[in-house]
Image (cartoon, rainbow, N blue to C red; front, side):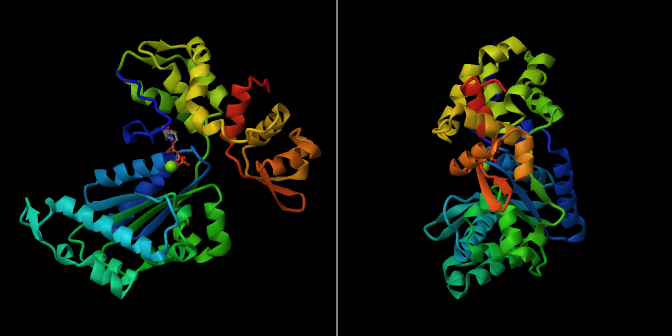
Length: 366
Ligand SMILES: Nc1ncnc2c1ncn2[C@@H]1O[C@H](COP(=O)(O)OP(=O)(O)OP(=O)(O)O)[C@@H](O)[C@H]1O
Ligand SMILES: [Mg+2]
């Protein structure tokens, strides 16, 4: 069996592990849309490599398994204005409907269909509609989606939304329409804060379904390792699982690096995990080694101690208690690992995985 672990790709929904409580809430929202025509928002946020895209893929798969809605996913890669946003969700929804109806495409202006179902949606001229107003285009599309129980729109890396576009999220979820809408949005660690600070009415759209993803618990990690090899001749020994947990601190991207390196057919032992650690670090190097290159080993030790607190905000006293002296607080601020947000208050801005990675790569004993 080919190596099922891969840190460079989001998790295959079949191998998705953990996050059970979040998935339960998501399923409640989907059922609420199907049974009571209730629209809802879901927000997934967290540091790089924590599993946001994997979560969105999993949610998409859950929604598709109900076979009652249309589900679209878009990842943003550059600044997206209000107009861009409406255009892209309109286009994606039209594409999804076409696919569902079996329309293969338009050839010489003639729609080639393999089913006889027709809908006015396919006659919409997106360009002309958009000239009226971007919102009007979206409204037209939405009102013309034929007989589905819900529309799910996923926007990955929504940090790229302009402030006006962000404001439209509320309009999109709350607009009166016959088909309920489920909006699933992902963003970086400070995305939620930005919503609350600058656009508090929007934050309410996600109330009850705002998930700050963190590292895996030991049980979650076990599931993530075991699930892909279930029913094969490969299995992880308990000591090996504990070892992966120690090395990665449960950080999803690092878990995948270590698992990918240690994978063999047969029993994966603790010794195997130890022996392949260099390979695991090589796998993560392109991303992780470029972060805080100029940090000293002592900087890494301090960063590691902060990461282990498993929090985002700290007071000077907390940092001191954790063993990070004032000198290193200053150094970490300059390295942009933490940020001073007010007198005596700091925020962790770099992903904890970077501390874990550098500690391993430089063989720092902590
Ligand atoms: N629930 C999960 N089950 C199994 N593997 C996971 C899970 N979540 C994340 N991973 C793994 O962790 C790695 C990073 O996940 P992912 O790409 O989803 O993170 P991300 O937060 O979207 O990262 P980025 O900020 O770079 O976009 C991937 O290799 C993925 O397979
Ligand atoms: Mg991602």
